[in-house]
Image (cartoon, rainbow, N blue to C red; front, side):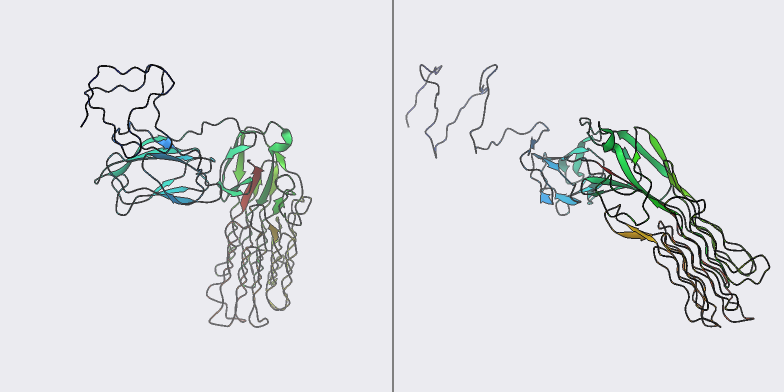
Length: 469
């Protein structure tokens, strides 16, 4: 073995000083202190080379050239930008060893809409428990470090701020947020606030489309008419992606400002009952900005109450008490243009069955014997999925004269009634559709059903849509 001892090696010419024998050779620098580089200089690993034994100082190498859009297994020492705009997915952590580190960041600001799931390896733990972590904050970034078998991976850094440049689009919060391509949809199934926090520099870019459906009316009891659908109003849909709006869409998109917009979502009306006598109630109103939809009218209840007007009118029933008539009630009350709903169908005087509740696009059917069908609701794709809402309830059937209770669409409840001793109960309007409650028909003369109640109306809904990218 040859040996050369020197105190200093100084490069005399050229631009490169080579130490070592090339491939398959090892160069050893043996000293208590080794200094690489000089002040202001750069020390680099050759392309494709790796390092070991240097350890880490709590940092990762961010993989900027590989934005993640689907599930993958992370490697220790790396940071990943995760884009969930196309849907939720899972990041599998590597097998943990003390000091292992992985960082994740919300690439598109959509973790609040499509969550990112982080799964530990096998039986390893996250913060002392073998469960997945769900990252659900917009603009979040996190760093996990594996500590030991007792606690496993612990989140050592968590940024929940969304420090981004001012977006050239509307940005807002409130309700349940979903995506339809380049558009965000805020769905309110109860009262809340639509808060706009930033705007498009151009006013036309701040237009939001909307759908407002009120609560459906309650169905009537015994020989009862059905509840009318909650009033239905919708913008034309041309401002935000030209989705397919309902045939009764009208008004205009709302141009928002940076402010808070209170959202009211109406509850469904209560059912009428016979034994004991009690009138049902209309549905409650829903509203957004300057647009209000009126609650659906209650259905007729035998001996107790007449059908009531509303966004759509309640169905009529058997008029045994003077002043409580057979006629269905008017819809579109108060009037809007286009109409927010239609009238309920008439009940049957001699036939005892109830008329269908009015719907968003059609009147409720009359009841010559069978219960009248509810008026048809309105179908819109404002949330990316064609959905029918605000259908009238089906009228109740009296079994001595009819064969079928009234049917319903668009979230309306079906009517009730049927054979003596085994009648079919009326069906409630579906929650958050504005559907009217089904009416109840009764059994045969002199032998009313023990349960002569109609069904409740369905609660309303408010949906807001705008371009966010």
